[in-house]
Image (cartoon, rainbow, N blue to C red):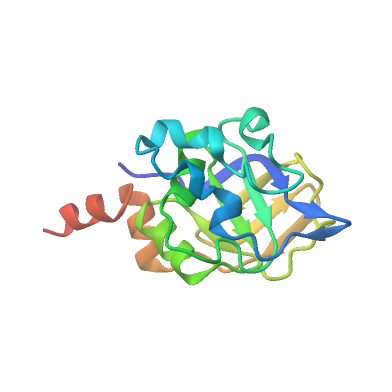
Length: 173
């Protein structure tokens, strides 16, 4: 499986009072009361279910959408469900000013693209506008606005293009 590095879709801008939401932890992304769910296909309906203002996200998100958040997205536990719930819904990528280290590693290992966009603000892109994300070059564009981010590393890109860490390892053997 070779996956595209140029993505386009609607962008969910997670914000409150004109600011991107910072410190969205794994419990807000995927509440611990649903940890008994083991089928990835069933995890999506709980995505952002514990995040004030976005509890209906799973009902409204569309396949191919992307998410933009503030600093430290995915902070907290090593809860793989917090990555898998987005995969289940067909979310293409999560963009944030920064990521919790464990969340970022889990996403990379799952072949789920996460890209840091340190200069993003709540008013850089309008909620649900169509954006284009270039994972290789680290760019996010909408109309006349282009914002630079941190491109995926070569290894993260290889894992993403393979479809996940296990698929990548199989190719290496």
